[in-house]
Image 1: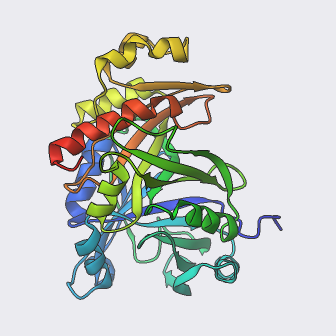
Image 2: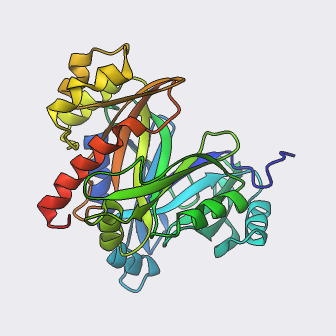
Length: 362
């Protein structure tokens, strides 16, 4: 048995609760190039919600909508708007992971249960994380279906854009609670601190934040946790907390091997990204040095570049993908770099602040 008391094999899927799952599925297919894999709803015997499974590379997103106003998920949607409900882990032993996590201080959301259809049986349980975010433990050892029981194959292929897998998922929490949630991932899930940033690293003339990156023992699952820091104006993290009405997932970073190709296609598909000033590129190469990609293409696509002792990375951030300025996506390519773009923080947050100012929230 692994020395890790809570062995997590991978992120099985991320479930987003949305106002209209059918339309959200269409958006992720057409804009982000996710192919539809399966569907669950009244037609498949699931009476209280509609869900669509979307996949590209090793990333699976599930977009779900509650169908009745008295459903608990309807209240979640009313309060928070569209956003991440559940980051689900694939595990070998659900009962062990659940009982061990509870013994280590986790709060239960759903105790272990079995669910079956003609393709077999799964085991699942849920615990609570920051805000109303959930973590599911799922075992598929006895299941051969397309996704989970209750889902039927409903394939709609899409032209992928080269997204490979989830690189990291970032959570925003209230000021003073970042260390609490770092302790949660350490003590409950067996994560360790991968790196951290303080308000000296992440600040502009107006606002600041602090961040701590937690990772599982394999360093394959990474969860940065942000909190606002005191500044002259409202932090972007505080704006998120206000609109989300509490903590939640701020963004999902998706890895690509060819960010020039991926972002070019995403822009053609209508995905809107944050803009950084053209002056950013006057000095970036002095800091980053030589890269394999064409610097003119990096500039044309408005990509950010950074380097650490292991290599470089290229990254770009979408605008929020819903009307509330909450959830957005990062597209990232790693050329050996294991960091998160520390050298880009100032330029990135100034770009976010320009959008805050347009909303009257800076």
